[in-house]
Amino acid sequence: MKELLKRLIQATPTLENGELKAGKILVDFFNQHGIEASLDHWDKTRANVVASIGNKDDNAPTLLFGAHLDVVPAAKEHWQTDPFCPVEKDGRVIGRGSVDMLGGLCAAAMAMVDLNEQPLTGRVIFAATAGEETDSCGVKRFIDQYQVKNPIGTIIAEPTGMKILRAHRGILWLKVETFGKTAHGSTPQAGINAVLKMNTLLNRLQDWRVPHTPHPLLGGCSMSINRIAGGTATNIVPDTCSVEIDIRTLPGQDHSEIINDLQGLCDDLRKADPDFKTQISIIRVVDALETPAESPFVKAVFQATGVAETQAIGFTTDGPYFEKLNTPVLIFGPGDGSLCHKPDEFIEISAMEQTRKMYNRIGQKVM
Image 1 (cartoon, rainbow, N blue to C red):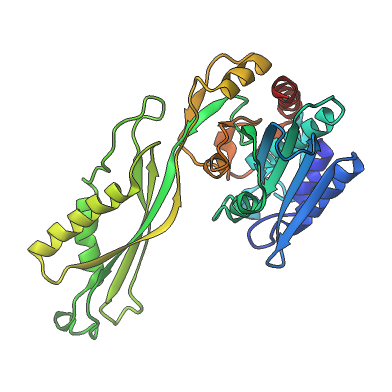
Image 2 (spheres, rainbow, N blue to C red):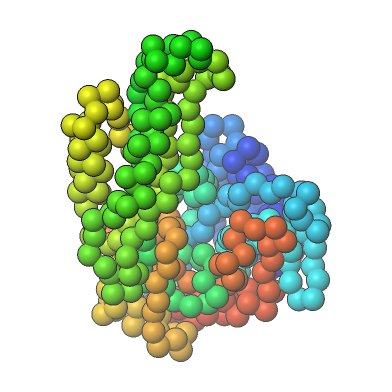
């Protein structure tokens, strides 16, 4: 398992390079273990891998394992080792993507090998998808292409420290633009400065509270202004300025209500200043996730793993897309999630092995 992980890290499946090379490695791995696997390849370098074991009947009860094949880039100067030349040390594999989430992917792949040796009444599908770190293009493509008629549950192998999570926040990324009128930098009074208009908006946003009702597991939602851009040159009064806002939403929360509330704030500013003009646009939306605690799948996973409670997380996964298959979704995998996207990212080999065994027990329990 650790050798598969090292090979996938070496494949450098970042957005720039794509997932194709890593996908081919994964398909070869499954084929060598007698498991049917396919490579879905598009846009030159993008790729999904789908493997299936057990009952071939499309109506058979189906367990899904989901994992993303892509990793975020890494700046070598901040690492003690080359991030894409994995190092094994002190029972760990160090390298970009080791914890997020190639380690969990490998644990699920090995569980497929284990389960393939068991008499299964149902079907198990493994989906390693592209682009989770950017636009979730791979899981969207998988959902469009594969008909899963009788799903009984999905495990997303994200790093949770082997805790079972049944809820997480969603994403609402917004771009807000302010508009002005250009003029020569020496005559600013002849123009309307969009950057100054944005400053007015930012001052109001510091006190803006996203409308929501707190969630029992996730608490409140969050809002962070993380990017700003404006102007074209030092000697030109800027006619545009934009900010990008990262809002993390809660299960059942109405995104349109949030946007309307923000629009109302902008409208109030325009009433006070007729030159204040804005536009709000959506960059990305991912629904929040919540699987009911009383779900039979949750209870079966408890029995298989010996874990007696579920938790929640603030970040987002591909889970809500799998949820569109009408399947309960749990987030459960090896590794410390606080290491994601950081220099010297690593995963404990023992955690991968333990998770592999737990995935195997889950498969045997629900099949």
